Length: 229
Image (tube, rainbow, N blue to C red; front, side, top):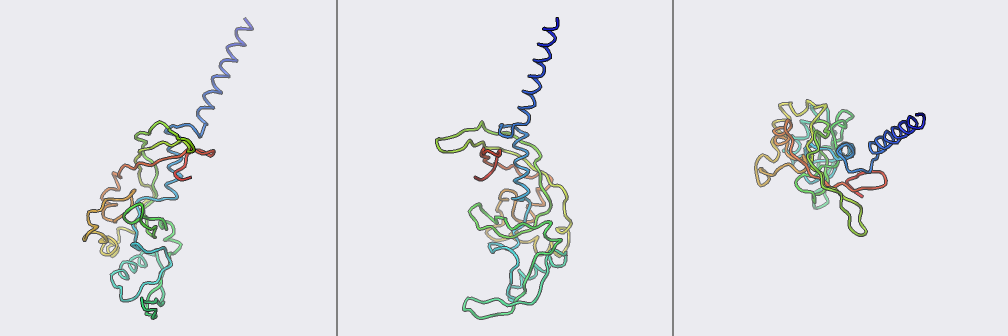
C-alpha cells in the first residue's frame, strides 16, 4: 500500500514538472511565446506611426524657411508640445547657407516618437515619425510549423493582429489634422496601404479600431524567438 502511494506521488510529481517545463520553455513554438516575442518587438519597432519627415532622417533637423508646407506641418507638432524650434541655417545644393528652422523632439514628444518608421516600403530608408499610441498583440491568428534549412535557424511565419493602448491626443488637434493629417492624401501615394501599420495619419486613424493583420518571420535563437538575427 505504501509502495502504491509512493508511486502515485512520484508520478504526480513527474507530471507537474513536465507541465511546468513545457509552460516555461521559451523555445517552444507556441502562441504564448510568440505573443511575448512580438510584444517585445512592437516596443522597438512601433506601429501606428506617421513618418513626418518623409524620406529624410531623424530629428534634430533643420528645414529651409522656403519649405513652407513642411514648416507648417512641423510647427503644428511644436504647438502640441512634441517639437521645439529655433532659428537655424541650412546649406542649399550650391553650398550657400540659407535661413531655416531647427526642430528637435521634446521630452513629451519622445513618448510617441520613433526614429524607425518606413514611409512606403520595407526597403525605404528609416525616418522619424510620431505614433498614435502603444501597440500590443491582440490575437495570434496562426503560425507555421518551424522549419530549418542547413546552416539556418528554425523559422516560423506568424500572422497576428494588434490593438492600441495609451492613445495620445495629439492627432486630434485641428492644426495637426490640417497639416500632418493631409500628408499622402493626394498624389501618387494617396492609395498607398499602411506598411506594417505605419503610413498616412488618416489611414492609421481609419483602421485604429480594427488594425490590419501583420505577418512576420520569427527565428529561434538561444534566447527564444526574435525577428532579426
